[in-house]
Image (cartoon, rainbow, N blue to C red; front, side, top):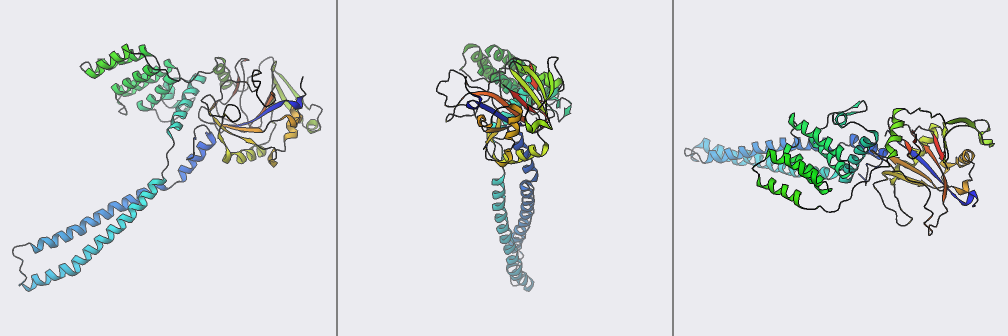
Length: 460
């Protein structure tokens, strides 16, 4: 058997800010908040509006100068105009010297300013930034994941009600976005629920999309993910509305007579995962009868005068929670240290890292030398494991519906070529509180831990 210092301890530090234009943003709540604040302070749109208002006034002014010149030309073409008449002669020279020159000069000046403002408008327009489409898709996937995992009602969500937090009702077009991702996530019943709500919205007067268009889209998506019968059923409603359409009759034959291509579907979470998460949502303070709570000092000097408050959730495998371990000052410093540096969390072996849909978060590995992490000795005291066995501390921040699907932290024993020693334990710290969700779920044990700032979880 290996000595403990020859093994590895995976140490995680997790912070969730509430439930996240550089690269991807949706997978980090912290970066979403930063982008929101940036956009709130950005006055680019306001400056554009001012310049466009100025352009409108300038165009109106140029119109008046052109009309003035046109009027001068009209006077000259008057049949009664006679240069032998002293008054006509006077007006001819005045109009085509002072008045004409003034009008032309003012027109040219306005044109020059107009062009300068156009250049400024172009520069400002180029400063306007938009999120990548991947962020939109990621946000919708997170939304659907939250609904599926926590069993939220489609009608409530469409009405803007997320567990008592109310927002503006969703439009039929927004419901279509949810429907599409639900189909691709293999959640057909959920997809049809979103479609039904969208159709109800349309019947009630919502004009963001038409009845036929959304049914055509629903059928196309269902067909592409190999639900041919569902696609044909949906298209029957299209034909009912458009019985004389040759195009729709041909499309129905296509759905009924051809096979679909292979598609990638987003896998569903472990069957015990939603149950464990929902239990935490329903009662964050739930204590199972077999829980053991105690004060623990491990015979270590650092804990002698302030023993750790420990709650043992499971003996085999061993899972315990350390309450009120780390103070707010330390947590805040750590968050501020890592926020500018986090990047999308990767999976895979060293040298073959890549992003994955089953792990949507951003993170950072912290160096041992960082002065903020002098609490290593404290973690040693809590776990009775030597610092030499620790991996680098990893900080993770989850975004909209962010998650890491059920997994094991240790490496498979079959991987003979793995160059690292295997992991024997994980120590995880929560850096912030959350309003809802965010639990660490042990799906096979029906156990979950709700995040709380300063709380730590230790599993072996």
